[in-house]
Length: 249
Image (cartoon, rainbow, N blue to C red; front, top):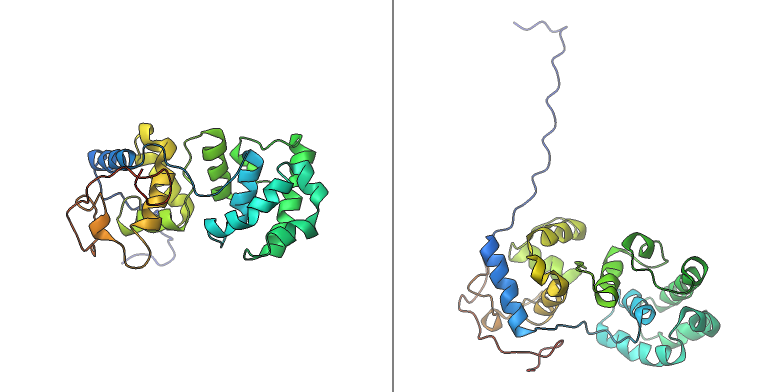
């Protein structure tokens, strides 16, 4: 019988098990190879003219559609396409331009604040560094990764709602948080596909692997897909599409 006075060493807590991808390296490579054939040079759907306007557009896109943001920013960017011009425009006029976008009052404050921060800390130039970008008002990790990818050509993974859904639904890169999914995708996607991977996944999620009623018959990776509820296992033919949207090239 064990002596009740003798304390036994506590067992180390089990570390949380990280879910693995359901795909082999060859399958992951084939998925992105097909995406590359369908859209060799994918692009985001936000309209911008330089790194600053891209940054502003992405900040404004939170809880808004790209189409809605584009409608608002055409006039805004014609009036102010640099941090200095945005400051000169002022919060009230910025708010007027973007009033059709959700949370427009708060976003107008952030646009002015980040413009001021860029002037104060970066000589009015958008930094090409993740740590510096996320210090800016209204800029989170996803926004920073979009800017780094689109404005600076860096192979980042900006995990939005579409990518998070796809990564977990089809078991490509399961993760409980966007950051976990980001790390997982960066680990498994072949280097030659990383630059465009986040655009391919976003467009696939927006037009094919949708939140409601995924269009499995139109999916070019239906045969590879591991989703338990997919309605088709025959891949759609690979037809070259426009860089964004879902129209033939």
